[in-house]
Length: 145
Image 1 (cartoon, rainbow, N blue to C red):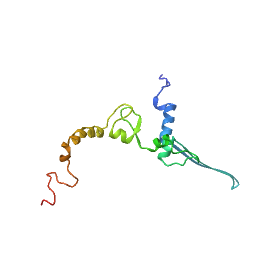
Image 2: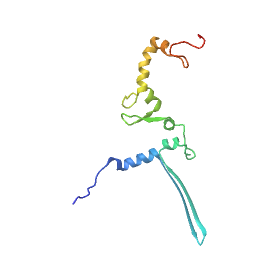
Image 3: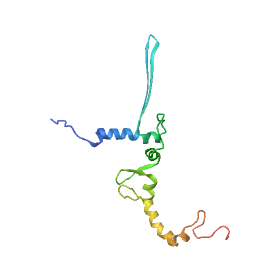
Image 4: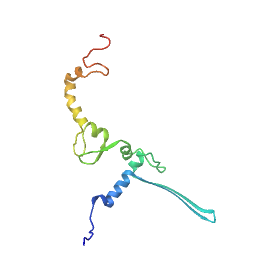
């Protein structure tokens, strides 16, 4: 007979559950009423949100009075960040897409294209070859006609 054996799966760990909970957030809405013979004796409304500060800031949740939102951590939470496809760590989106991942050095296709264009533009080669918006590829304009 085939016996079931416990398995350890990384997707089911407590750490994974907490990370997902803080990353995605959880909102609880509950209305509890206790009534006897149609008369409401007790009414409780529960509204709770469980999330990291970064997730809460992203969704515009209100914070307790006195929360200092001008700290470095808050500024980092408000700036748009993306996950690096190579190492999986979060970095500022603009830096990740236009430059490189500060953790592993990964470069996006956009960053590589910008890097290859820089020498051409600095030497003056690329300036004449870049057509303006609305200009036909042959270089003629409506005024020439």
